Amino acid sequence: MKIAILGYGKMGKTIEQLALENGHEIILKVDDSNAVSWTNQQLQNADVAIEFTNPESAIKNIKRCLESSVPVVCGTTGWLEKIDEVKEKCHAENGGFFYASNFSIGVNIFFKLNKILAKMMNDYPQYKITMEEIHHTQKLDAPSGTAITLAEGIIENVDRKSQWVKESNSSMEELPIFSKRIEKVPGTHQIKYDSPIDTIEIKHTAHSRLGFAKGALLAAEWMVGKKGIYGMKDLLGNG
Image 1 (cartoon, one colour):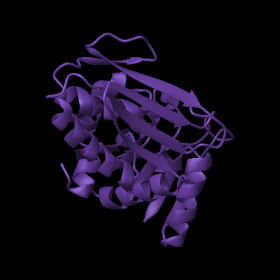
Image 2: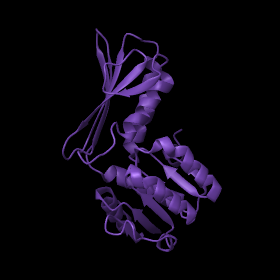
Image 3: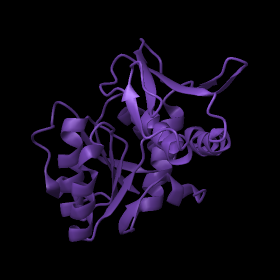
Image 4: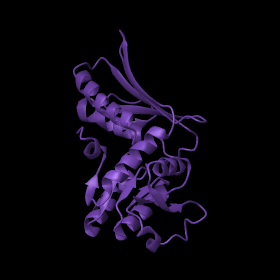
């Protein structure tokens, strides 16, 4: 499989290492040195592109992939207010687009566990619900895309919650997300249900980027030759 890596930072380098170990070929690597000069012709030689850049670059990169008939796997977060624009482009170009806020298999199990617990806690309004996420200082968006996905899973299943908010003295209808940025922390997400009597917590802690990179590479392998819009539920079959 020939792969284009759009965003050759720490995650991109980890993906490259795994891809080479699995017998794949990296035919394009985009970083700050060639961010302006790389061409669609270079991209068209790829079977799939993997996009991990920043919110400002992601939409432009995804559209270039779709215009070049190259399926794209995107893990960049912080731009989802424009997801409908990307979906429209994907349909217009008859392209292939895969998005996940988190590619870790463990995190996607955590997503499902979160929804199950939220559904159970819907009948117990005495529990105050809060969330905390911790990431490395280079992460630009806060709260994280993973935290937002977790919050949406709670809001879908807890009637008394209608929206998430960033670090605040929230009202009963709001779900607060507290974000911290600490050096060399791959990622921690914690959900707490707190009552005067007891506390229930679920927590996921990543030990390295390896889990995210493995999931992204798995998605890229799965996307070769596909058309349409997909996510981790499609890949894992755990909807």
